[in-house]
Amino acid sequence: MKPLRSTQALILSLATVAVWTYGAFAGARVAAAEPVERVIAVVNDEAVLLSDLRRRATPYLEHALRGTESEVEKKARIKSLYDQLAQQLIDEELIEQTARKMMITIASLEVDQAIENVRRQSGLEETRFWEAVREQGFTDKQYREDVRKQLLRLKVINQRVRSRVNISEETVRETYEDRVRTARRSQRIRAAHIFFPLPDTASATAVADVTKQAEQLRAKLTTVEGFDAAAKDHGGGELGWLDQGDLPPVLEDALLGQNVGDVGAPVRGPSGVHIFLVRERQAGKDTQPAFEEQRAEIQRELLDRAMQRQEELFLKGLRRDAVITMRL
Image (cartoon, rainbow, N blue to C red; front, side, top):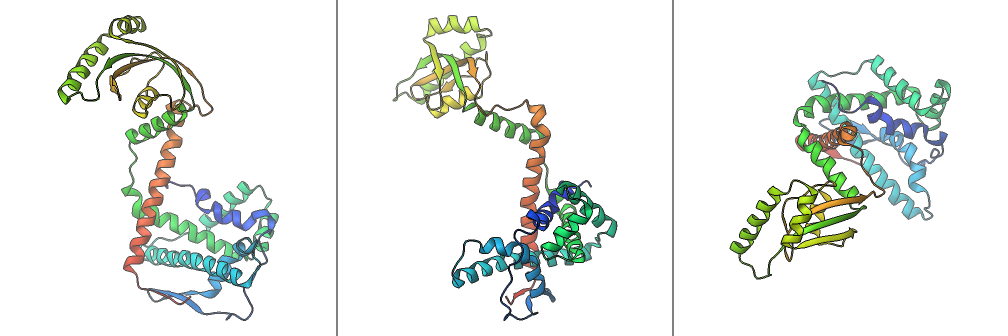
């Protein structure tokens, strides 16, 4: 089954950290008084070590401590960072254990290809790329191991949760239409309407009767000329140029859903029932391309979002079923 996200997409954040400004964030270290090695967590009888946590924290420490002056605040930020990264290491161990049960492995060639993809995306020559990795406190072996873990996570997640994710054409279309409506809110609309007034105290029967009358009229309005003639006979007329907020939200939403030249379905407003005609639009800043141009991108975004949610649920289930002892 084809992965939803590319290898580059999943390991790019790791690689970016490794080559980020060639060492701008390297150099921070924990106090020398701390133990060199100890167990910080046990996951189903497998140990997570302090050395692993320190190595994972190395590229982030200086950035995390930037702007701090007091030792108390520095310790608090380091603890917060360590707590967050410790959870990542626990998740990785759970993934490793799950992969062994599923007999999933990552070949050395897969790691080579993934690193080469990231190197090309970074724009660095091979020698400079590995120099940058080492400047961040990684050995070549450690970096390769981190990439292997990312690839392993990708395989496990795709095999375990991919079947739960299904993005329908209808969902893609609805998402696109939501974006179009949002974009249109920055536009000005020139519109006209046919209006059937209703008092605030109108009964449900009266509302139903007027709505039916409006629907019957709208069914006959197949041209702009027909609309204009009906507006003279039934009330309404030109609304002129409308900006966002000029109409009540329920009426504004109806107009946003119409194209130029469309005669819309009757819509109930605070004072009665309206049939709108959109005569013209002035494009706003956030115009949207056609649906077919956006379709693939929207589908990818929805797939990634759904997969991320399923991954969170999957990991939550692994944690729930595991025996985890924290010693940090």
